[in-house]
Length: 359
Image 1 (cartoon, rainbow, N blue to C red):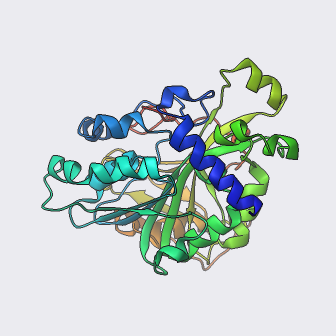
Image 2 (image 1 turned 45 degrees about the vertical axis):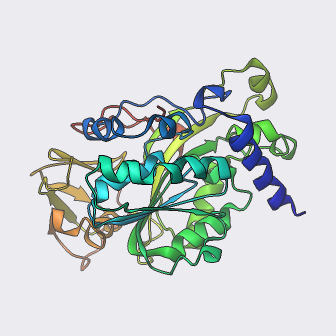
């Protein structure tokens, strides 16, 4: 048995047999606090209790502008986020969940018809597949198909994170995005901790050092990763805290766009945008990331990469664009740092409240 296969089996055992509900977790790595936006609360009230009870996410991984989209959820578990997005994409949209744990998949499968009726659909717009998020090719998921990929505190559990990112890049449409919350460390986790099955299952010892994650993202084609929000992780177990020592962990939400034309750095071209206020549930401000909260009707200066993240994606029609790429003025100073421990948690726009995650 390979080491990667053993890790996957350990995770299946932990999330299928050891954990029975979110309260069984020993840290808040997979269960941080969140004040949900009003429209999310309204959908959540329609979701089946069993689906909610089996949820182990670490962030609210629901990006804006999902109407009509094809969405893939990596590590979909009991299906909570899939069912939230099922309501948001609408009857013409599509949501596919991938998970490797039989017990979790059974909960999701058992309630497909229930949620279709809750949302007033003639048939479910969801599909749940058993498989590994590192091996989406084995599930016959086509190239350039999905508008959005989400993942909620799962990629850190994968023994081959580069393969996950490569497969996500492959199945995304050009201009699509990977929007996900996960756990990161402020330094590399030593090997002896990575071998600890409980720490791995608790989303700690599989965490990537944040700078290694940025390097890996760019390697597979996701240039200029953007931090949306961050929160420190607290460890509720004295035993676990002693084991991890001085390593600090953070729950971070990133958005990665499939835009090969993005530059390595944020460059200044004298550009600006005006938000029209037309993205659903964001009538006053559009949140691109933690450093770009764009107020409706107000001229907002942006770098060339941010311009492309808006104009070359599903957000194109929601903005007016001023400028072009004819003149270059050097580095753009307004995009901030990608280090999670140097970024303040994002206060949400008009409806969203604070960031975080659990039920």
